[in-house]
Image (tube, rainbow, N blue to C red; front, side):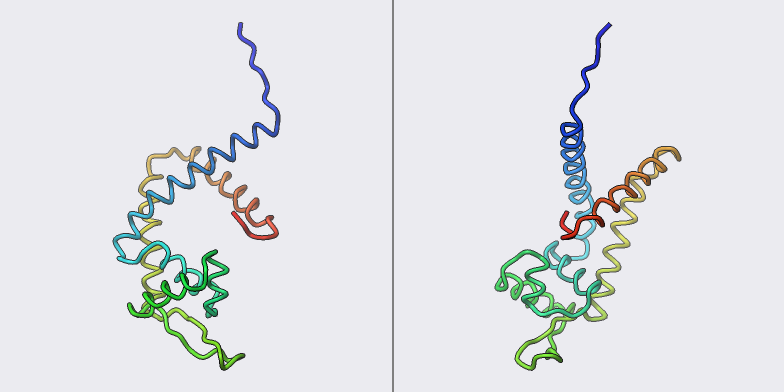
Length: 155
């Protein structure tokens, strides 16, 4: 009879972290196909999402939030503005600065993209049993708690 060797709790955590990381990347890649149907690049959709959820922001704030340099953010915003998804307006607190805000068209596009991704994910989950769905839901609850407990909000 073979005996099982217990791994250390740190190794267990590392193994789960590795699997979760891989699964998250695969999930995002699978759902990115839905975003391509919108005709908006992933970086632009990310910026648009920040603006829809958080509200108007300066270019520097957006760059910091998206972890890119301000010139990169300026190019992303230029494209979004050219396509009618965002507008620039004077910052009410500093006349020298501008704020970027999502337009109604941008908000609709983001919501449409989210709906398409959710439909694709729902189709992928259709084959799960009720017990598997419950189990997955419990895992999501835990993941949301872990992400919320991070003081810096980093993933």
